[in-house]
Length: 401
Ligand code: GLV
Ligand code: MN
Ligand code: MN
Ligand code: MN
Image (cartoon, rainbow, N blue to C red):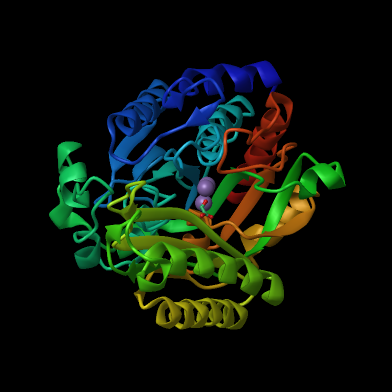
């Protein structure tokens, strides 16, 4: 498939949710923008005579063949983004899935099992805080009762956001029959680093995903006047937060791991008032769960020490935790062999990582020359994306026979 052909379908989605002029995207799940993305997918699927379904957790499925059939070959990714994210993280896997179906048909492949393109909901957890929420609910890795207690930053309940989109939140929950009918899952994704660029390879295959978690640190202090409160009399939760951010950086470097505080919430958030409360979200990732645990324990310990020093309080809650994922099944082995592509680990989370515990799963990466992701500079050339479609088609063709 030529680059122009990829660019044509890509171009029909890319205006949706683009903000400002730096190429950034805001596509948060169940917002009007997300609903436009979902409509785009449904229309593209129907144009291809695929049968469209929405499952009980709001994930979208487009079927070539019988949705109730056994051993289905499923590909896809997500359409939601982080706040001001890049264009490719998620949508590339969905667009490539639709184009791969076109290519299978053009090649005259007659599948002996159903094929589907899936769009998972709230993969980034950017709106409701829990990443891979759609796939976690599907697989039973997240409790639906807990999901009903999730609210976004404006206080909107997940249930209300889904209800507004016509879904029944009381139906949220595991879908073991659906899962059991899937024989193979392949997620194609933009690479979120520069390894393929260094290797001069357009496509890679994932070997593993680092274990990772999200932790909310709530700091409480004493709000007071910025001008009149002596430095010695302060109980400033921002100060405890700042020391915790530094502690996270030091601990990550010490453990050869990754720790990030990319989101904070401060109250009352006034220039001339010492904060009364502050929350920080820690994203922590490491090569193994033991190191991850040590990393988080040491950051928590530093936060508690500093809180004692500052006369503030800190409470820590785990918002999500994902264990190490190894893609070592037949599908992944076949992908590495068939596509003759380099194999690489990743520190990023994916629906494929959630599914891998239940379904034989592989991930393909497309080269990202900027090496940047979760930011507007995320990149992939149309030519590489077209190669990605062809490689995905090769793999699906092998799997659906
Ligand atoms: C999702 O993309 C994540 O890895 O946080
Ligand atoms: Mn992402
Ligand atoms: Mn993604
Ligand atoms: Mn992800």
